[in-house]
Image 1 (tube, rainbow, N blue to C red):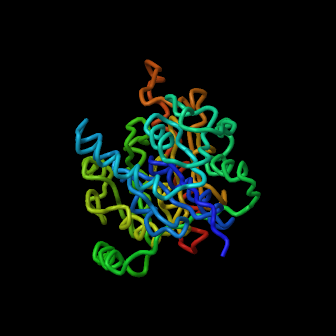
Image 2 (cartoon, rainbow, N blue to C red; image 1 turned 120 degrees about the horizontal axis):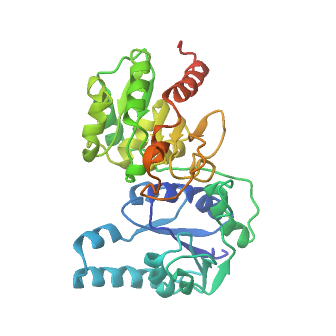
Image 3 (tube, rainbow, N blue to C red; image 1 turned 30 degrees about the vertical axis):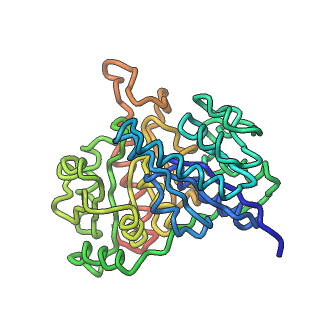
Length: 353
């Protein structure tokens, strides 16, 4: 039996980027590699048991950050590092390229350690091979960018496949309970309006107008964290199925997979909805480029929309403009533009508008 080449993907976060790396992992698996993935808590539940990998290895960096510098964290790090070295990887690839991936790459023991030429925060020193920068402007999709690692390894495939773990019966039952009061004659539309960057939040009054338009046409479901309850209440979620603070990633996977449409800003929710391969997705962009980070695929199903303002994209967490131009990107596109896209999706699903 021919021994498989063992490869380690080092991509710790964030959720959207983790999901954009799944097609890369699938290409490596299809090419015959044994694929492991070092990932943080932010994406572990979606990589564990995912058919794109042989093993997901948890690096609890979020917990370490909360805990602060401690001897316990240091010994946990060493334990994981010794485990990686014991695996004797032939290749490790760092698709994140920042300081927190540097030490994993430097000491993981892989014979070939492939990093980006444009890695940040000294992360290039974790490798012994470099590939050209993958971010080739705002008009090339992130998913395609990550596949450059596969091409570097000699894999020339057109396969772009998103996969997720199978949903457990327990999760399905939990979601059944969440949705039990819905109208069985109407489809689900999910609105997930929040994300970690406040500057990515579309204007809440725009959301409110979209919610009012959809009232009575579909089953509306709202998702978000516990900190998003005020926003969701403002846009009208309390009148419908409001799951703020009640779901984990696997719950969201199942909820999104039952919907015909998911609407969100540039966020993990939008990317997770895309990765389920089922609903249409409308992702609204403010400070980041839609082409680069939008849901990948059929442009009649996956919509990445911004306001086409001259300041977009700025890639900043704090708007540098002043006066009337300050944070103007949060107001665009208009709610009528989004409603027009919603109508197109509803009509494609034989729903009267």
